[in-house]
Image (cartoon, rainbow, N blue to C red; front, side, top):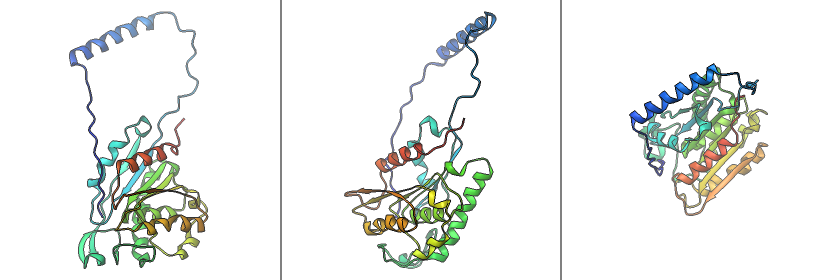
Length: 265
């Protein structure tokens, strides 16, 4: 259930150091001369220009994977609006996993069977325990000055299920939750625990139609569940895509987050 990303290489062209130094020196001399001239008729800006806001993106990996292995995702987010974005790629604790015959591996909570369908058994107790750890990470960033509306939780596979649970059970409205090849990890009884503020958090759900690990039907069950909870969901189906994540999905995520970031002013 590991994720696989297409990596892109960017070639940066730089000027020779001597030319760069000369250009900087000339610019400084011109600035000094202009500083001695008559004041400009243009008034200074009365208010600072709007710029990138502090934001936080938390990425939750799939079963058996690790946080550091997913860090290349950041390379897709080079736009200036992400200059003040803090990223977190935590790793799940090592614990026995039932669907892998009790083998110990990185796992956010126990999974009883694979493939996962819409009717697979739920492990709500361990899901809630994992949610509390995610909420602690979000609370830390909010306490440090990040607006909850600029907090985005994203996850693949098991991390997608944990993303959904974490966003729905957080007491405030977040910037968004993005689920990739995930599923609903609890029963409908959880709906009564979703706060009115959490119901305002937008959800992006992406799922491969050829997924044989978390079946497409498990993904399709997401939007009706959210609709029952009084929430909306943008669902994207990818024909021919198996249990993996692609560059197209990450680029779609980037655009989705950019459209929801609240700029500073």
